[in-house]
Amino acid sequence: MPPLSEDIHWSHISNQEFLLAQTDTHGEADTMAPDESAPSPSGPAEQHPASQLAKKFPQALEGEAFKDAAMTFVSEAESFAAVVVKIDDSHHIINPAHVMTILAAALDKLCKKTSGIWGIAGHDALGCFFPGKNEKQCIIMLDALKKHLVKKGSETVSVGLAAWPMLDYDKRQILDNAVKAIDHAEFFGPNSCVIFDSVSLNISGDKYYQAGDIERAMAEFNLALALDPDNVNVHNSLGVCYGIKEDLDKALQEFKTAFRLAPKEIMAIYNTGYVYFLKKEYATALEYFQNAERIDGSVFELNIQTGRIYLELNQPENAKKYLENATRLNPKSAAGFRLMGDAYSLLDRLSDAATAYKTALKLNPENAEALSALGYLYEMRMKNAEIALMFCQQAAGIDPENGLFQYRLGRLYFNRNQNEAALDAFQKAKELGYPSDEYIAKSLKMVITEG
Image 1 (cartoon, one colour):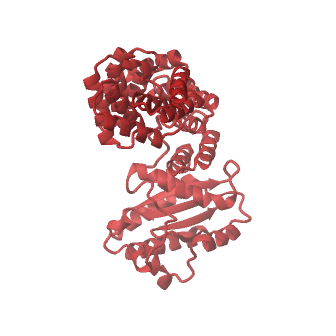
Image 2 (cartoon, rainbow, N blue to C red):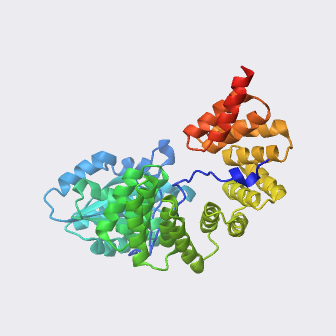
């Protein structure tokens, strides 16, 4: 019987395992930040602070109607600032509609005094446009408004500000930028004030990324770099997007730029190494991972990918060390335990390998790699024959495009003299790039003999 290690490693490499930055909030802040603020979806009217404003301010406009009126208002302005003022933690306030009415009265007074216009920008937020004003002038005005609200015994508010002209933004987009600044302000806590900047765009891009809209995320990241070409986190985020799109050369360019700007930034180092891993340039990838390890060896992704590289380089003892670290750092990683099972199998620690594969399946019963590996391990050890076949069949069913899974299934059929099924599986394995000529010939000979 051939050694078990013969067929251990034929893994698919995912391009989804880059490190994405925690949003950098070291932007200019007066000490402020976002909520899922303005504009927000509407529910039952009585639950929303803005719902009662019409009684006292029947002229108050909302949504697109407010934007239309504002665009007319600033049509002749050579510059203006847009502001979103949002009640902090409105869902925790006993009577948020009362607070919104106080805020509206204060903003109405301010706009009349400064030739501004205000409207409803969300269920707990109001928006304003101030022709001829810049963000810093607005901060001074709104600081006075915030102090007034405190004196009235009202709750705190956060403020997002954006100016026009900026980049190639249309006037109508500036209120949206102020909303992005409010989202940015959330990172600083209640009573915050943030001016729209590259970090605001990075946060906005992250939201699109998390929602799976890679193209819009990239558009936000590119705008952020137009504002701040040296923003390390944005270069990293853009690199991740290129990586997901499998444009590895552009991903590498962004990560190397981030690495040049911040040579000790572990994310940029790891992600650069991971691109080389995806390109199957394992020695180069390992150099970057080892560099990252010298900065911080406690990163789960770093340990699991270093372990994978050592498996690719057929160095299971080194792989074992990193994969054991990875599973300690993240005991819920099915992939970590499956790879650890591969390392143990290559080291002929078959009982430990079986335990690792079983753990992977407890964490993820649909882990095709663990199903196939455990089934094949049972077969090679002549244990649990029915379960071995079932596991290998399940794995091939989950991922029918994996050549190794088809090959292993063919071996199990062949061992049971199910020669036609074995021949079919071996032929599929060969079509998928897994070398199977020897067993195709053996199976074909048996089929002919039986016929």
